[in-house]
Amino acid sequence: MQTSTSRQFCTFHVDKLLLCLDVERVQEVLRPQDMTPVPMSSPVISGLINLRGQIVTALDLRRRLALPDRPDGKRPMNIVVRADGGPVALLVDEIGDVLEVEEAAFERPPETLSGVARELISGIYKLRDQLMLVLDAERTISLPAPAERATAV
Picture (cartoon, one colour):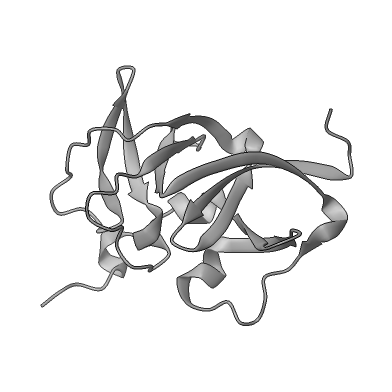
């Protein structure tokens, strides 16, 4: 049972990072799915998946966090997140566990965190052997409007 001084997180790996989302934001976790490409969309959008008849946008967290592309042949797992406009799938390298951590262990993001990660990480938890970065779900799924994105010439 969860107490008022702890929180539960769904953990996952992207590149070498251990990331997490509040477990209440996660609708479900899926194996790799077939995707339909979306022409002329943001490079962050990998495509659309069919989730039992519902069309869900899939965002690649590697691209969203400005990390190197996934190695060839490695298919991403899907974390389906509840959002105001309907579910959104986040593509990750590997699914972790559900962890319960004490709220007292929460810290603000380190000053060394830079770039887009600084905008998307709301804090960290120091675990015994590594840092767990808390992903801000709303900021992560909110992409800039097309006019705000840099255009290729």
